Amino acid sequence: MNRPASPSRLAPRRQRDGLLGLAVAAGALAAWAPAAFGEDLSFEAARTVLLAKSDKLKAAESNINRQEFEVKAVETLGFPELTLNATQLYGRKNFDLSGLPVGVTAYDYNFDGPRSSLLMTWPIYTGGKIGAAQKLREAELTGAKAELVEAEERLDLQLVARYFGLRLAATVEGLRQTQLEQAERQLARSRRFEAQGQISAVERLSAQVSRDEAGRDLVKAQRERESAEAGLARMLRQNGTPRPTTPLFVITSPIEPLTAWLRDAEIKNPTLALIKSKGEAADQGVTAAKSEYLPQVFAFGQYNLITHYLTPIEPNWIAGIGVNFKLFSREDRASKVGAAQAQKAQVDSLQAEALNGIQSAVESAWLRVGQAREQFKLFDSSLALARENLRLRERAFEEGQSVAIDVSDARNSLIRAETGRAQIAYEFVVSLGALLEASGQIGRFPEFMQRAEVQLQP
View (spheres, rainbow, N blue to C red):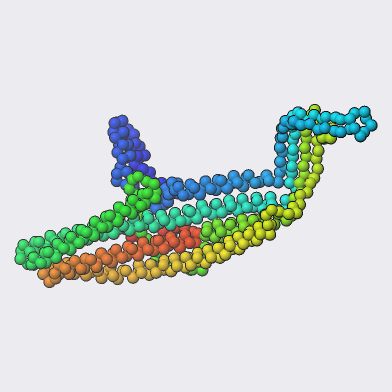
């Protein structure tokens, strides 16, 4: 997704042939404008900014990098290990030779001197312990990648709620502003009619009360819009005030059937992928625990680099194959196997529970999408009635056949219908995002935006 070009990039280009002072002033003004007045931001651009600046995603990416290094660290567990050893020895050994017919009764052997050797050990068979360790790290890497996708999906859903929540707040504010302007015009007419003696002071006061009520509603809508702006700006790590340009939308035609969404959720939901990776890791834990019952076969070799101080029985080099078979362990190996198997059973149960929860979330979101779509279409008649009723009430008031409170009630009915329609559109958008997130397909959200038959322009 391409981010929208900022005014600071466009201004110098337009002023290329102008005076240097004007160019500098234009650049300074352009740099200051986004922070002061806000920046137009489409949903796609907001998502690009979020993915680039989210600290949660950066942490998840760092975890992937760590797991990749862990995988590389165990790739060579089956290779031979070479150790350089250097020591300085001090010691004596007294031999009693009095019983031998060699003419010497005793001999003192001096062990003093440096020793240095190369020692090689090579695991040949470990009962599956090495393979289990390698597969365990691979499973953890798979889980880290699933965690990153899960974090992206949840952030996308939060962005849908906040971005279009700001869009809804701005729409409601616009409706309240229109309501206030209409109430002020009504109040002006009432004052004129009162001066002409056509209506009483009570009618004019009723119009005043309606105007003040509309003013209070506008102030509330402004505060809610400012709060939504602050939440979105903080989420996107922006200092300026974001101005959403992507409108609320509704897909009036039916979407894919529930069975398709459930099938996709079992395949694409990152939470299931994460739990599956934990199940694979638990399998390797069982293998590693069982390997404690099996022998360890290894090859070894040693080459002494300093031979001057070796005793007569110490070889210059030695090599061979060995077997270790643990007859008794300080830890209860059977309990370790049981613990690993219990962990595997726990993960299997968590996977079944997670699948059930995800299916419930998919079904609930799919039903809410359908409900919002149907409710949105049923608002058309309410809007048509409210508009016609307001038109007739205003005309009747001008002709002296209606009172101010009737006009106020008609206006409030229209505002409620328009606000309710916008709120239902917001519920549709959020429910659609929840459905896509639960099925692991939140990345398809722009695709559904393009499919929308209705867009609510403020």
